[in-house]
Length: 136
Length: 208
Image (cartoon, rainbow over all chains, first blue to last red; front, side, top):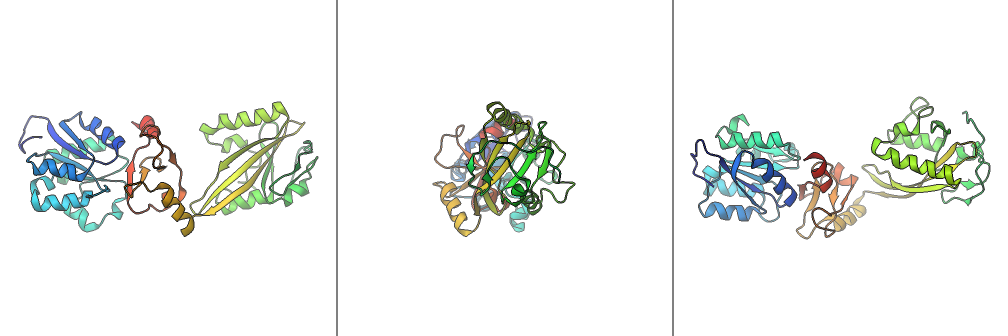
């Protein structure tokens, strides 16, 4: 966890996925470029960290989660923590057509389709971490 | 049609597919049976397929017409690489024991789940008669879907599908590494609501 302007330092990433194999895989890949890599299995747990003052350079969140969904987390962050909302990347097993267009627009199309290729995961995470979401 | 040999299998009584297993097989008998039948030469090349075989292939987009029915090709050529050793062993066993060998397998489509029994009858000439009998066919209709829901939806209300191979995790069977994942064609064709995507242990090992 870091401040928003940690130039020259490794960036922080929060990974939210209810599936341990995905969490493990994502954390392993992201640890090449990010530190710390914080992994939690629910949106509620991730939100609790942010509510307590933590800031993440990237928040990689699964779309379909038991309890609060990735979409609900994003909408909540937009209201309460807009700086964090702009760091959210949604990961989904569904094709983008299945996600509501308005949601994708609000998200600035920062989504990644499962199965994730390690290179794609690192690219979008690094791009968002450096504040160039439009290039993702 | 040309069958290069007169199959000369021993008598086995009556098969559950309605094919009277008399010796020797009569081509007219093979033509009439509702089971999908092919005759293979000793080199496992397809020498003959019956009308039911052609009809099944055409209905499922597998083949149509003489050119694509597989006649003249080795049956191993249309067998996926990973499965070849298994099927080669089945044929070898039938040849060595001079006894029929049976194997049940699934051959489903997006609309129906099918279970077939394959029986390999060795012939003295070295050829084989292979009979594929449909044992069970269950449409993926509302009733079947309800059963699928009961089988695969976990205690959190989610269907967990591998994002790579699209198999579906059976809830409550084993931990992550030992979990069982099933091929559910209906869920591949139409993703059910509240599907969570994970990675099965086989795909983790293979891809990552």
